[in-house]
Length: 420
View 1 (cartoon, one colour):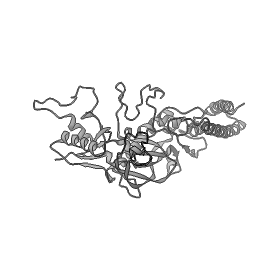
View 2 (cartoon, rainbow, N blue to C red):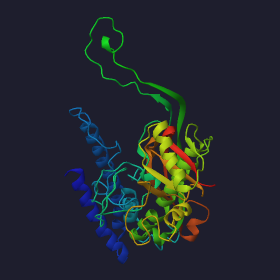
View 3 (cartoon, rainbow, N blue to C red):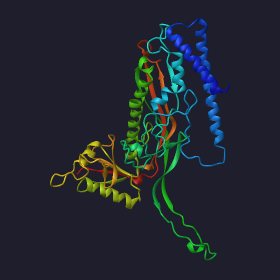
View 4 (tube, rainbow, N blue to C red):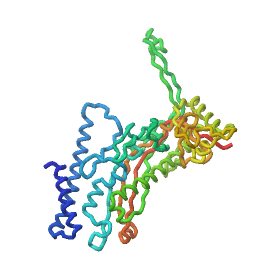
């Protein structure tokens, strides 16, 4: 019997013992066996996880071919299958959560001892979160056959609201701190080079290949921990659907909002990385005539100064609304108007609304220069060893990750002043 078959048999036995426990018909021997069964399930899951890790490591040696994608570990559920679904669904399907529920079938009310159930659930690296690059199209998510767009790809059929996090470059790193070259300017010396016409070894006639030059600053990138937590009752924790929805709608959303805030407004101190607005080298555009004219001037500045491949215009929701409400002299809306379903654009570039940018300010440019690299993928932890939580049947659930933020070429971004 291989480990997966043994795990299936143990789970079947655990299910039978759980049914008896709920009916109050467990014998003393069966109670001992239930505890032992849970321990064996954990041991077998550890063996399966090690086998999967070894298989992945060995697969990386074969052929030296590019496997593509991010080097994120493939997470497994309690049955050893790859995890799918949202972050909340991955948590309730994780070995940590399913094992705990099997050992504590009545945890929502009482464990029968009168002392309450000690809770300590750690589901590590249950990503990928939205911060990890996805394939261009993904319809695997359970119960939701909707396209997931890679940065820069606009799908006219499925149009979920886009945010700043959809524009930046996302990936992974193994370093908690490193220095990197931040490009200030570049000189493009690309040229056509024929075969050497002489042996002097000088210039293109000598077959010498050109060399473009970069002016750079040495910048530092450091890993920071992003975390948030909420209180839940033990009854909520015992319900898969409730806890999954709570994690997806609150915890991960809160983390995304904070990460977006730091990308824009990070102070660059010991406590947080430097955001776009605190990075030297980012271009500045003063107000000219009106808002559309000013944004158009920033587009020209980016093209002539750094040759940026512009992605989008990021506005505060109030300024985004003001753009939509622009009218001509006869009172007609200048843009799509209230009944048009076309994409929101500014001078043909996608408009992104962000609450974390100030009213009267906009950002234009190539946001792929902003890189957010995960050092530790998103983990969900639940425990009640806090304050008087055990006494009140409460549990603290925490989501956290560690990531490194860097801005490779600041001159590909422009801060625009929209106020007269």
